[in-house]
Amino acid sequence: MDGPVEAIRELEYLLRQINHLMNHYTRSYLNDRGLTMARFWVLSNLSRGQKLTMGDLQRRLLLAPGTVTGLVDGLAAEGLVRRWRDENDRRLVFLDLTAAGEEFLEGILNFRSDVLAKAMSGPGETNSLDTGQLNADLRVILANLRSLCKGERERDAGSNKGKL
Image 1 (cartoon, rainbow, N blue to C red):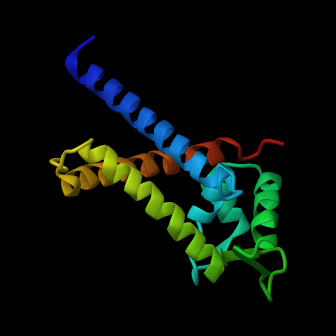
Image 2 (cartoon, rainbow, N blue to C red):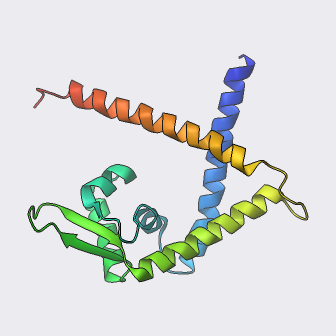
């Protein structure tokens, strides 16, 4: 195996491990507050004052519509998410965060940022990483992945035309 392929595999491994450990820390934090990771992912995809449809949320999370409905039901019952139907098209259900949901999400995101900041500097060290450059590089990767996924969805939609 040549160098660039090994470097890409290492990058994928490192990203996967970082995600796993961040989720581990987050899960522990959420458990103390009576929330699941799945509900966190719903909250993290919503913004206060910026409506999102249930269908859009389902596509973002790559979950079945019934699963998303159950998650949203629980968050709405806790007063963290607001849900309403479109006046012109009752099939459309919109969501956004309530003030309590926004505050709750902010606490989770602050916790995650603190964990990552500590991990980036290590015990007794100061952060020597160029966070700005790292973020810029990761934004490029994310944009390219989104583009690849969009192309794949469009290809899949085209290949399913005419099928029953």
